Length: 287
Image (cartoon, rainbow, N blue to C red; front, side, top):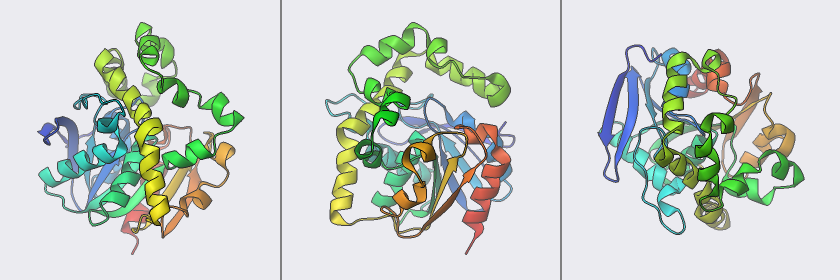
């Protein structure tokens, strides 16, 4: 994976980010989800690299990037704080404006980056994600049954204890055959690190403490994403089953949005990288 890419540790002020970057052409930032690291993008990044300069960081709190300091409201793990940190990373790499693709938790940071920093984000792609407040206000018994971890992870200390007791039992669907040996080994290493487990859980705590307030403030003020936006979702995951058509929801948050489903399970960059690459390239290269 990542043939021809550089692997660097970049100090961006609040801490250092582990990042792979390579390719040529317009810059595109790829943001992973939970509990992944940047390695989840390996197959897709290689496909994109002949056409784009591809930047794949570990999100703050994940992988081998810095751990945001704890605060009572988890504000240092908010999507606003992470978006600001990643804007700093892109500037350090020489990219004042760029495309952003986010998956799962990464889609929340990508959305926050686009709405807070419109001059930096040329186009936005969100994969298997909605704004936090949409999840919370639409939560029903299906959400509580299937996405209960959102509320469990908001509790103090107990999630970290449960995961760190047996990380492979908690993350029991990890597969080296699906992910690739290198990505699998990298993820196994970080989920056995209690500090990383805590950082990943703080990402959820921030959603239920401060992120949804940021979303509400934007909605009340009538702010929307102004750049072209593509919404993608995995047809063999449950986003559409729980919420209906994701495009209809994203139209409340973006001025120009389109999208479609991809034949894949949740981790689409690993399960169907060719289809994801084609969707990303077609959207980013369109006038």
